[in-house]
Length: 391
Ligand SMILES: [Zn+2]
Ligand SMILES: [Zn+2]
Figure (cartoon, rainbow, N blue to C red):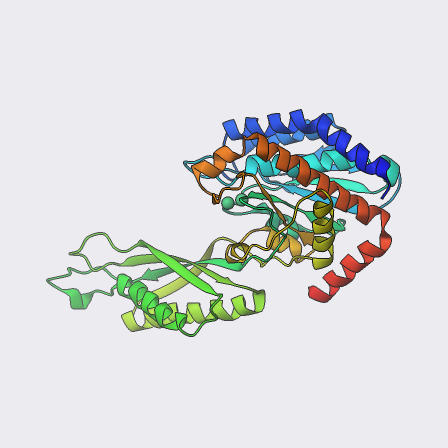
């Protein structure tokens, strides 16, 4: 890549940084839960429109989702950056999605200043509700990525970590239906729905010994009856079932459901199950793409590390990574301190000078990598070849 592009990227980042900082701080000050991100999505859309993007908003019938497109003057690959902006209950932007959104939208803005000359199309997607019912799943299912060649998302963290894996996850609720009776005078006339629920927990606890060490099954009872002197006619438990890949998740789901069927059978009650939140697929990092990003970051003086922890959560970027080559690297905003996300301390790190510098570096890395893909057709071919083999 010529020096000219690198200099132009750096210059553009410096130009847009005040707007990105303002965007992040505005969203920080106005935290909105998933699917209520009206102010946050509006702020992103306003900035993208100001910079010449054509925006579809709402998108796919989702009020707080958007699709912003900037088409270069000549053809080339379509590069997507995915922005999030949902907050957490009680602690606001404890996951740092205010800064996440500013970084990914920022990368889109910077790349849009180059594509008129180098070719290609930039897409910025506003993806609501990552913490609950993530709409990246909706978009992956609706074909949003059919016309996209590469998808990037990046997340603030307590270190610079390379894109890794995440667990496939399904949220399954079991409803048990029994029959009330006086628990002392005529218990034999009742059917105890809570017993069906407790049997299920016991069976799953037995199952746990036989499952793969990386898999997880964890649940709570959300309904267990009304009073101790009434045989419960209704009980409900909600579980998350997680595995490292979809085939094992499919296997594990069936085993967990059998535990609930057995629990209901033993108690003589009826059981129905349902998904109570959107399930997420596991993240498949495109290693060719990831390596190029990591190399670009290294040139900027940042070593991308491997994070052993990131494989133990689930995220909706997983679904995206199964329909288009994608990476989801992390950038450090905690100034060397081990501060985990979903805390007040992490939230407050998103407003520091160190965090804004990390945002700038990350935008630089994301834009340089996109430019590589636009200019180096062999690289893009390799990325797509790996994707075809993986998925
Ligand atoms: Zn997050
Ligand atoms: Zn989070």
